[in-house]
Length: 506
Image 1: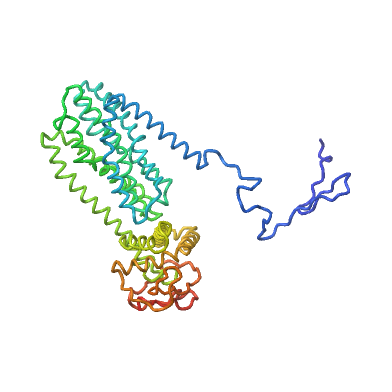
Image 2 (image 1 turned 120 degrees about the horizontal axis):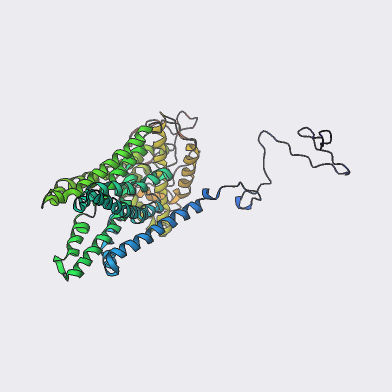
């Protein structure tokens, strides 16, 4: 085809002529500065043309692959442990090893009550520790011990070296992988030290569960072979040492890694060295503590008790105090950030005080349950508390990062979304939190005359004043006067009028 025979291409915006047809060509719609797409269905499921996406980028595919991987690891672990312990030993070990799991899980979940994360993260951490990390530890430890025994021709020293050096490195690295994955792919749920402690604790609890099955099952097999039983049996001694005296051993080691990742999560965005150094330092501490614990039997007959009493118990107490202090720090963050929204009218004047107390939160849920309609009302108050806490942490992180990169590009959208959720639940949560603040002694709420509230139907509670329209607060937020003293007007410096009158705080 020659160049001269090519069809003429009209300039942009001009319709081409159709040869042999009297009908004009369909014109191309003009493009405005802000085009409107009225013909596009608002429901994405009804789109005729959708952007193509690689199948591995789908959340369903990735979740399915992860579940399949963990399930396969679990099946392999089941086969290996049953092969070593036998069917009876496996069942006995399973029944005894499961006893501390609910207690440890409840303890770590209690630490996460201020801003609880999704259960799927905890299930992933528990499954990774019980299946993937345990499988890696069994295979790597066995291979390394056999290699050392072959190289040195001394099986006894190979066992000691494997327990005191190889096992801590392999096991803590395998458990740390779960915390790393959550840190990378669930970053919004990884907000600080408490989240790191909880994720690491669940991972180590799952790992200790599988390991206890193996040890208790082997001990039961030894008792069956020697026809011994009772309190003097190997099974009873193993149960006492691993389940009664030291159920917190593995969680204690891995919590050090979790603290490192939590400190990295609190580091500003521009401090990349901290984000790498803190997790590595925590992992090294976890390996060192694990090595000391495994080497305690080499220090003589009483070496185990010396390490247990002089090191493990004090460190356990120190880390417990640190976890509780971090939880109280989260409550202080709620108390420091939410008054900005209370001054603008989004929250009641007593709500920041009630939301900064776990006792007041529980009282508010109980009050809503008995006064407003049962479980649905209590669930609405619990959701209100969770959204308010997320709002406080969102503002706190934006305030911390303003010196480096400033608030994220989606800060205003996320803030508005959280305020929308709070506004929907405020008719029930507002009176409940006001009652909780007074019932727990956080503030004194005098009886207020006036018509009964439309939700409480109680003459003591007057309706809240109208709220100011939504206006994102600039960072850093202004300083507010303490409760009980006159503060700045709501929206001062933003073109808004005076805020609603506070009948409770003067």
